[in-house]
Length: 269
Image (cartoon, rainbow, N blue to C red; front, side):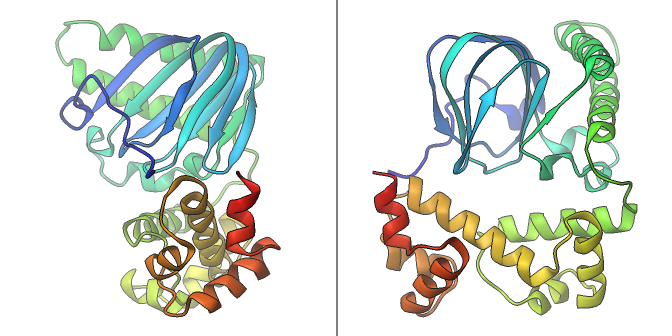
């Protein structure tokens, strides 16, 4: 069965933003959203699933979920967390998220000082969200930007140029819109109105990988998601990902993962 969109009790595209404290005792089925999502673990433990990876939940951990990523919770115990969701349209400066690298990470663990700052900002956001004060939307947008900047500063990466960050963010958006179909770097460079040289330079600066390798990794990750969560056959997945020859898809997958698509799917049974 195709993984479902989560049945929200509110329309986030209209609301743009939501924050709440959550206590999960029952499993949360794996699902996906069209919005950005952030979980900040206050206390408790359990298992968090993101696509084909699973992570141990521990306090002072941030889970960062970009649109379309499959995620859920299991085996939770005394789990207390902040849940924050937002649409990019909440920001007046539309290119703000392009300057952020944080959603390239699945999770970040923060130290005591960072924990205090992030908790304080989340608390201020929650208070503003539940208030009826004037200029509420402006305050939420500003506080959310501050929160994301704080999180950005915790990342274990060197400072990168804003132009590189913007280009990689645009590439990720384009690949997502293209269902992560396999394509030559020149195709993406042309659609981004940039050169392969600049695209390679930006990716190398941020991810340490060149464009061809990065695109292959993203396509393989999508193939693994579909094999694990979707009812499509291996042949259907091959065509969905832009492979005109299913046998070539099988060889491509085995070269990158080490086993065939069928063996990968069978190993999950």
